[in-house]
Amino acid sequence: MNGKARTILAAGLAAWLLAGTAAAATPGYGAPPEGLAAALARLAAAYPDVIASADMSAVVLRDGTRLPVSDGRTDKSFEEMLDHPDIDDMFAFAYPAGAEAAAPPLNFDPGRIRVEALFGKIYGDCKAGTAQKKFRKVQWLPKLGGGSLMFTTAEGADKALEQVSAELEQLPAKFRTYLMPLGGSFACRTIAGTERRSMHASGAAIDINVKHSAYWQWDGKKLRWRNEIPPEIVGVFERHGFIWGGRWYHYDTMHFEYRPEMFQK
Ligand SMILES: [Zn+2]
Image 1 (cartoon, rainbow, N blue to C red):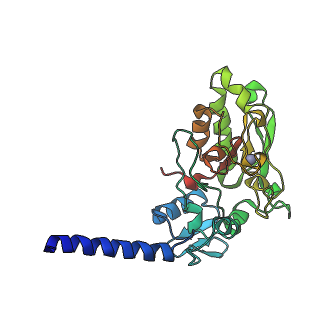
Image 2: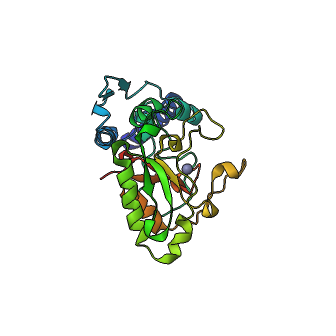
Image 3: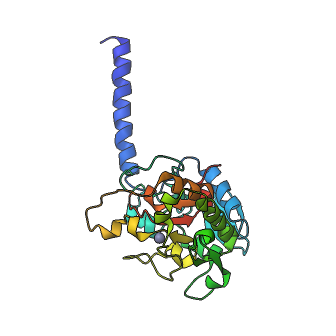
């Protein structure tokens, strides 16, 4: 064995040992994601009425609440991350804005992980009646007779939705069937089968026409992602800070929610 071969063998052995160590040390979810500092800056910029500052240690709210960015866990199961996320877990999956719609990889749910302690401060609590105090009536596609819905005014979400509505009205008539009648907006409830509060309970989510939707909870144990929602519609929502449930492994293709922190400018 010459020196070079020995070096290659040693490097291979080291890589194999390292891979074993890495697999043992990080069997689950929870490690800080790449680009975390930029994501925290986007978070603070997205919710300036509630967030005073955000750095790699904590998100500090204007009322003095301090939310640690990391709970130190890197071994969470996917369900644990959904049920007990810290701030960095919210950015575990980068939201693929503008990408072609396609079946996401296993558990790829960008934006589905939400720290309730933060969102409760931003939007209020519907059970206590504080969320509803921030609502106002928003006209949905008024030129087309789309009716109206109650939506939150927190952090300008209502204005973003009005811009979405105005742009969607400009689309050709063939798109209307996806947009009307509305599937729903405010509902003071937890997500089906969980204790987690839905963004519908904050008045910051909207479901377009249920008739064209695919929702993983309707499909039993065997998930089969598919989509009818045209990219033109998804693009309008995304340009105004709304994420789309069609980008989730746990798909919900009628669902859009206001999450401006998920978009890289
Ligand atoms: Zn929904």
